[in-house]
Image (cartoon, rainbow, N blue to C red; front, side, top):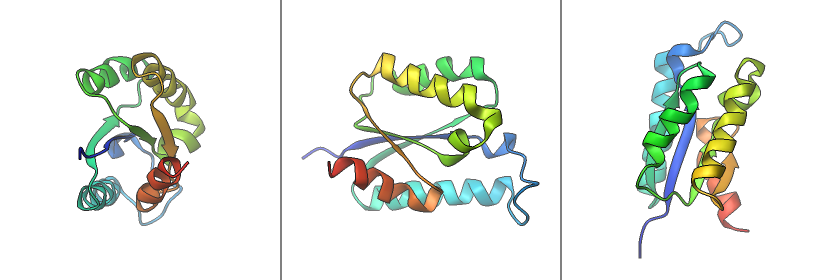
Length: 126
């Protein structure tokens, strides 16, 4: 039985302004993202993490690189991409590029790196 393939798409922690979240920083977020990927792997998923720059025009070439030659069962789009109004254009491009390159792929959305596995399970249970 093959492992389900998951693409985790999020903002590169290096481009995030952490001032609204005291005590958070790029290194801490990067560790949380890595922990989420490890948890998915230990639960039998084949995981690829794609971190985006803050340039909307970079989304398509970045995603094309990650999606080339690989079919993903689920694309998880992180809360940082979706909930920060400064990244709305990036979020739209993520959805449109994945939809164009891999039609029919399931999408899921987490609230934090720690809820990624629940988000994936939620869409797979339907």
